[in-house]
Length: 283
Length: 173
Image: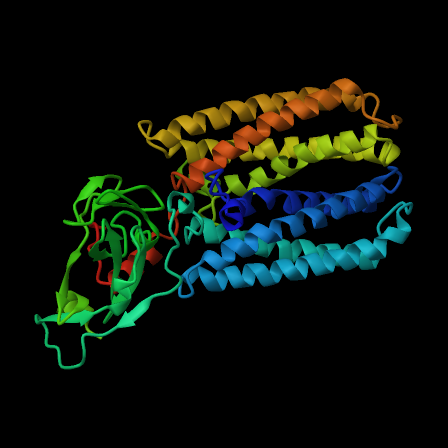
């Protein structure tokens, strides 16, 4: 499938972060050559080199945009990284537009000994925005784990969180049955991300059976609803900790603490989860 | 000493430094190969020959800066983890690629001011160096996207808060 290809699943490595080296590197090179032309105008060919580097940078940026948009579409709507990703994308569009203008302006002055003011200013602005954008892109990976371990999952990941409630009448310590009709449509190997009065859990279907467990890995709190399922194990996409979905027990580190699990039941023909309200999770 | 290590790990920036610096050689050296090929196709003349040399030199400078940051990141991985071995291969390949481009730079230093095209041997060195670099960069990427090296290292507190708000079982702090 084209989408899997653009996400780099056959390579087991996302494509967008591979390609972004080129626009970043070439546009920085172009800027450096502009700077050198100001300091050493006697060196020949600097502005021509800067132009070629910029042209290559813009082409590479357009190529990188395609898998970037696919990666963007994969981020859950309510993921804290989604806003960062939107900013990253807007900045990149601005960068490409500014460099397009820059390239066009300087194309008529390739034999000048040093860069003139307007294209130089555009390069400064372009590099500034590109640095911020690149930084945000890196934060998406290193802070928010976007695209980390994604290739290990072969079914679609949840695009949002299902918000449910036990109802206002529930007292502390009381166990409530919360129906989740969406769980019945879940295919094997698929997951739901569900929030019930602030309690966040993953519901997974394995072997036609539903299991519910806490969403956050107990190592660095990676999203288990985006993890991969191997037999009765869920594997965290970030650092590969494994847990038995039936008991919540750690079956492979680095995590050391077991998951909370929740009971799935069928009542009056409805599938739902049993949750016990306690002081920690008051609404 | 610890503050130097923290600096190299990128704590002050909130982002690991090695993957940032690695962008430069990763773009410059394959770029040099592209410029060499264009130059051999009689495109760009001496400006292209010069551009290729600048790209190699800029890549070398950044590679030397990237090496200590990579070493520090690698030293934080436990030896029994699969990522440790991949890191070792990644480092070895980077050393080979860097050496190849250093020789490459030296070879073209005498002629770049006048030449209108790049010679065959520097071009072959660019091709070999680029191939090795791509293999190495792929391994570096695998360390992040398969094994989560440096992932959620600096955002651990933020995610812990979200997990706590989501009523998850948590490890002791």
